[in-house]
Image 1: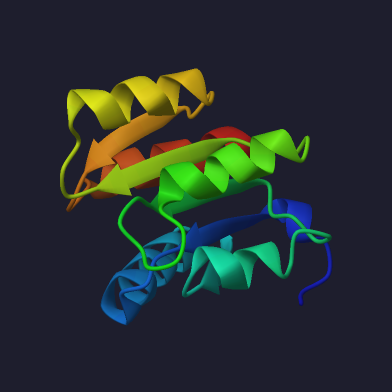
Image 2 (image 1 turned 90 degrees about the vertical axis):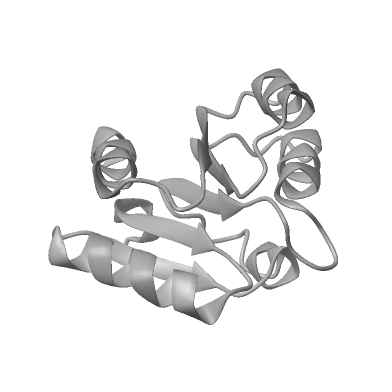
Length: 121
């Protein structure tokens, strides 16, 4: 893991192309980025949390909302942006209940991703 992870943006998505795209976009903007291919991979590193998370909803093992519920129940509160191909009213409502800062439809706009990251770095 990198030093000073609190200055890094975490990205969790099971699609390697999405991870690469988000990493590239954020690094070009000057941000440090940590990527995880699953919620379980991220959970293995919760002792070293990034400053914020960009999180996919549809993943194997744990969905994005399930991961956030687990983090919140463990007392872990950090800014989260949920990205999903299907932003249903139920997902948006549950995200709000969990204190997720926003829900974006895939593919999200570059400006939305960069604005979110910049707000927490």
